[in-house]
Length: 265
Image (cartoon, rainbow, N blue to C red; front, top):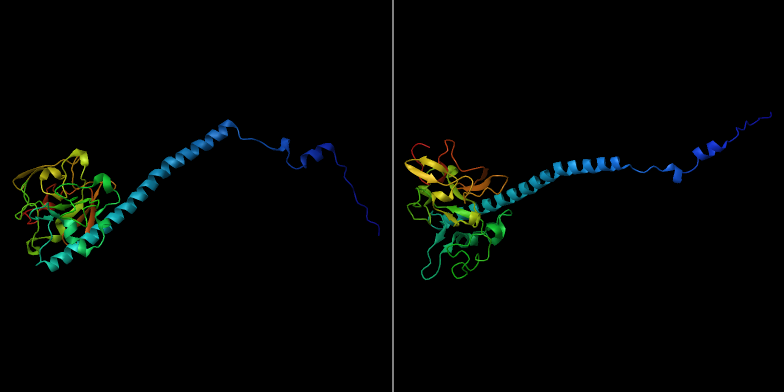
């Protein structure tokens, strides 16, 4: 059997259409197309960058909460070793400056980095009352201390133990709702911020409560410092740590600051 192949003649136009891509086969992007691509990238960046920044701050917030949790455990160990009494914000040391609370509880922590908030650091470091004096504070004087001790139980006069606030555990009427240590800023607005919060004008509470007038302002308060997503991390006397936007109680009062609670919140 004989099979005939039918050959189809190849024209010049077919040769051009089937040839590999050459100069005539490429097509460049137009200016409009490039601008559209750039605009899309810019929009995506504007959406994603804040998300990434928030994620980073959430990580710092978690690290800060871990720091405060360890400080809380150290305080509870200190209480067990010192007749059921908290360290307080400092201890007077005759002939030198005060011994700061980080120095006092350091044996239970073994790390000065615990006292530094990842969102605070040197820029918000406390430097008052000898906290950077290496004579009374040989271990923690170089630390970047970013956490402030609650020394308020009454308006502008500290508590019954003075602004040291080395309270007996039995005196804390409601540990779960009483601030112990919180985010603080040693250089906020150029104010005189201390590693112990002992005056109402260093707080974020404004108004008259329990017969006293609190003169802090929410916009310029020194403690707590809202450096974590417009809020602050707070260590409470029972050892738990919680993030809050402000320290006002549900009725707006400074109830959380008082060691001995008022009869009515």
